[in-house]
Structure formats: C-alpha cells, structure tokens
Length: 328
Image (cartoon, rainbow, N blue to C red; front, top):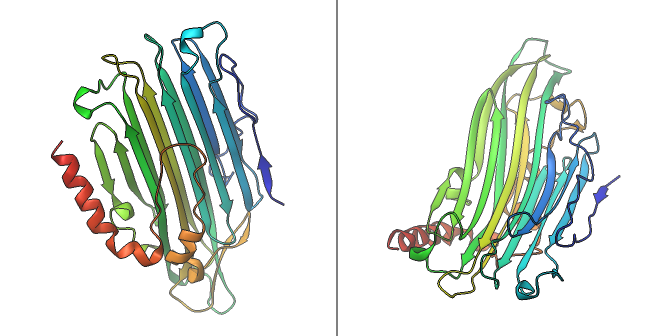
C-alpha cells in the first residue's frame, strides 16, 4: 500500500507543527528512518510558516509529501502585499524497483523595505539496514563479494537577479544542494552537487559525471550480514530583501533520482532485506530507469534533466559552467 501524505498551503504568520512526529529512535532498525519532506516560508523577523512530514515504517513503496507552504498577503502590512515566498518538497521510495527520488524548490521576492523574505524546502530519503546473505548451495562462512551499483539522473538551478558582486551573503542568496551519501563494505562515501547564485559551486562524486556507473564492493560471508546505507537529499534555500532600490527575486530547484541494485559475484547467493524481502538486482540500474524516475519540479527555478541520450555532453556543460563562474 502506498503511503501518501499531503499538506495544504499555510497562511502567513501561521505556524504548523509536524504532521507526524519523528519516530527515528532505533536507527538503523527503522530502514526509512528520517525520510522526510519539509518546507518553510518567512518574511520579517518573526513571521514563519513551516511544515514537515516524516515517514518511518515497513512499507517498501511510499510517497512523502508533497509539502507546500506559501506566504499569503498580510492584511496588517499593505506595503508588503507583494512579498512572495513559495516552496514545496516531495520524496518517493520504491524499494523493490531500487528507486529513491527527491525534489524541492523555492521562490522569494521582496517589495517591502526592511523585510527579509526567505524560503526553504528540503526532501530526504534515508535507508539503513543490515542485508542478509544466504545460499542453498554454499556452506555458511563461504566468503562472497557483494557489489552495489547505482546511477543518478538530476537537474538543479539557483537564480538571483541581484548581481553576484553586490550580494551580501547574509541577506541575499539562492542555493541548491544535492547529496547522495552511502555506506557499503564499511566505507562511507559522499557525492555532492552544490550551486549558489553568488558563484559558489561544489561538484564531486557521481554528480561530476552522471554518465558513469557507480560501484562499491563489500566483503562478506554466507550466513552473515552486510550493512547498506543510502541517503539522497536536496536542500533548497532562497532569500531576498530590497537592496539599492532594487526589488530582487530568488528561486531554486533541484530534482534527483538514484537507482540501485546489489548482487554477489558468486553464483547461488541470495541477498535479502529483513524488512522488505528481496533486494533489487542490477537489472534496473540503467540511465533510462533513473531518468524515468525523476520527479517533476512543482515550485522554483526552471530545471533541465538531461535525457539518457544527451548525457554524453553533460561533462562538457559542467566544465563550461564552472569556467564561467570562475570568471565572475
């Protein structure tokens, strides 16, 4: 059964608590511990609208979100009627298909002097479990080599219409931050795509070249367990305030899907999830599957996700983008 939780837009000055409490008390024994979607909007120093939902359980197919907050007109502030703050976030999980996906986006716009208009949206899928290793043909204790393979498809953007040279990092910004973190074979690795409208860019791991097939190995034995941790998350933030008689707008957005599978080099080995049964194999670890699993952006900056046939040029495009930012 699909778990689907939805939250309506929240009015300016309203504060909404979490729709579900964070039940993450026995990590890693709650495999979806901390999978969540959250969004928040603000204008001024004390005005806030925020929403968050969190999914923990043994349903292998879940949708977390959408979460959507919006700063609505404040009747007590006629001058600032046009202040804009809008954001949304969504995360999906399909363990049997080997798919985790997230999307989030924000928009901020200021028309009232002295008001800082901010927006934040965050989506996260976190999985942590000890996989079982069994075999009907190999005796307990037989050494085996496990392989985790994965691919990503993603798009992200951070825009601000105040020139980067004029941006004060404390009051004007737009940033998009994507991360894919994992532990396999006792080794932790992180992959990141970070972009800010002030010109800061951090790209590493599989995001540096999404045409590549990621692979990690783990040494184990029949009858033992092997820990797998996968976390994909996106954090989007935008903030605007009137600057030098300009009325800035900021927007961010990011969407990413990771497809994964685990197999053993040795024949006759079964890898299982105590919570969800069979672990996905390599069949779905394709660029086309990753692209097809990407979530559409609901709010925020325009984002392009390269189709599998266009991925060959993405490395050159990233290099050109980095070169342009280096000249700012």
